[in-house]
Figure 1 (tube, rainbow, N blue to C red):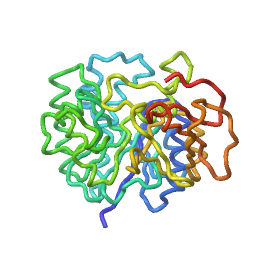
Figure 2: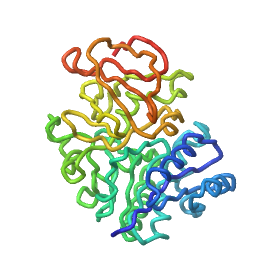
Figure 3: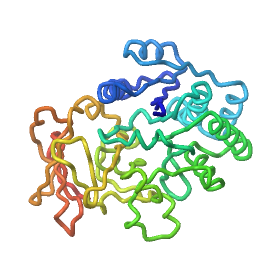
Length: 339
C-alpha cells in the first residue's frame, strides 16, 4: 500500500494555537498516518518535538527567496502572509522531492478533516491535486503531490509563472497551472455534478464519484463556523455567502449523521473536511464525535449544553423556508440568523 505523508506548514514567527490543536487531533484520529510539520523557525521545531511530530526544516533557496520576495505583494500584511503563502508551496514541493516514498498530502493548518476522509483514494493519485474556489482562484487547503517527478514539474511551473507575472498569489498561481495544464492536474471535487448549471463548472465535479464525496474549498466552513475575525475588526461573523465562490452554502441542504463525525449534503453525499477560517481552537479540541440534530421550528442560534463526547452541537433547520438552512445551534449564544 502506498504511504501517505500528511504534512502541515507553518512559516514565520506567528503563534498558531489552532495548528497545535489540529496536530493533536490528527495524531489521535489517524495514528497510523505519517505526520510531518514543515517549518523554518527553531521555536516551531521545538513545538513539533513536544507534540511528538516529525519536523522538516525548510530553508528557501536563494532563487526561491528572490522570486517570492520580488512579487508585488504587501509584505507588511499579517507579517508577510502573501509571501509565506507562496513559499509554503515550495516547502511542500521540497519535502516531496526529499521524501519520494509515497503521496505527500498537505492540508492547511485550519482545515479540519472528517473521520471519513478518503486517504485511500489519495494513495492512488498519479497527478497533483488541489481544490477550485472560482474560475480564477484555486486553493491549497488540500494539496497533494504524488511523487518526485511531479514535484519537480510543479516547482518548474511555479518558477516559470511567477517570473512572468509578479502579481500572482498562491491561489491565482495554482489556478493558472490547472487551466494551462488541465490534463496534468486533478481537481478534487467540491460539488456534486447534479448541482452544476454551467458547463465551465464541470471540471470541479468530474472526480466526485472517484472520491465518493466532496471537499470544502473554504465557503462551507466559513459559512458554518465563521470567518477570521481579523477580517472583520475582531468580530466573528457567520452565515455569509462568498459572492465570488462557486458555492453558496445557504443554498445547499446540509445534514449530519447522528453521533458520527460526518457532514453530508443533499441526500447523504459526504463533505470530507471543513475549513475553520475562524481559527477557533474549540473546533479542534472537542472532536470526539460530531453530532448534528435537525429541527424545523426556530431559525435561531441558541444556547445548548455540549453533549457527552461531542465536538459541537449544531442544529440545521434545513426544511424551513424552501429547504434552505436557516438556523444553527452552536452552544455559544442566542442571536437571530439574518441569512
